[in-house]
Amino acid sequence: MAHDSFQTVESQLNWNAPMYKLYEKAKKNGKWNPTEIDFTQDRIDYQTMTEDEKITALPLVASFSAGEEAVTLDLLPMVHALANQGRLEDTMFLTTFMYDEAKHTEMFSRWQHTIGIGEMDLSSFHSDSYKRIFYEALPESMNRLMTDDSPEAVIRAATVYNMVVEGMLAETGYHSFRQIFQKAKLLPGILQGIDYLNQDEGRHLQFGIYTIQRLIVGNEKNQRVFNNYMDELWPDAYGVIDYLTSLYELQKAQDWINSTLELDTDAMRSYVTKQFEIRKHQVNRANKYSSAAELVKSEDVKQ
Ligand SMILES: [Fe+2]
Ligand SMILES: [Fe+2]
Image (cartoon, rainbow, N blue to C red; front, side, top):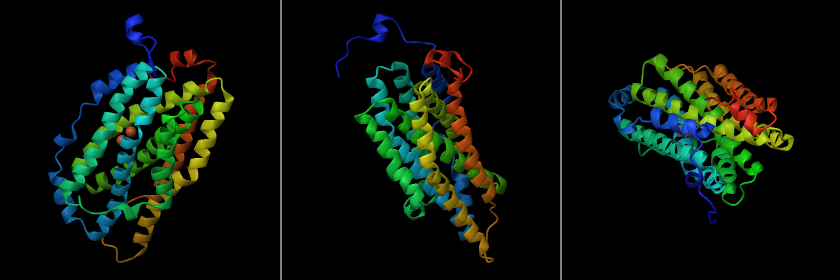
């Protein structure tokens, strides 16, 4: 598409745009380097873990690695759509977003390599629900943005990518992984990496919330697109977590289990349910405003 004008020639960047402020935050807080995380102790820990303990950890690892790879590969159409709309500050923020996801993918692959499971095929740990979200819904909704940048297409893409994959599944997965391994005092390197990664994800979520909110302000039809798609994805989002918790429960049901790891499966199921409610509530708060301009000035868009 030809350009008919340039924002920074006719005036300047909008320094107060929410996504410009998020871009500034990303430059300041997103400086960590996966290469600098020391996984030496993780390697020792993993090698001394029992087979049963490894079987608790690996399905989570399989979910994280593929999840980070999927969001790295599938983000480009969002950049393409918002850049085409001339949303300069959003596009600038998204350059940091893609870089963050690349580092997340690198971190897990580097960790798997270092602890000695780099060549292990973990794909059998992906459940049908996982496949429906990560192999199908996510790339389909994102790729639609290459040819359709309508509010409906943008809302659906941000709903599956930011609200479900990042806001529900990643949040629940990382939260549970932390609980298990912090308590067991194992794998300090990857736990540190997950702390960095969580900070990045906080910014990604803000992008998603803002992007959906600005499109549903004062527009009931668009709001329904968001709420309906959340409801449509919910059974599989829950299914992803339910599968992981069920695997562990099955393992625990064997009384020969040789493991010191503890996963609170009920807490994990209620955590994902709570994330679903929180994400819906956060986005639907846009109801209070009558225009996107009013939303931008509000407390709901974190400054
Ligand atoms: Fe990520
Ligand atoms: Fe992310």
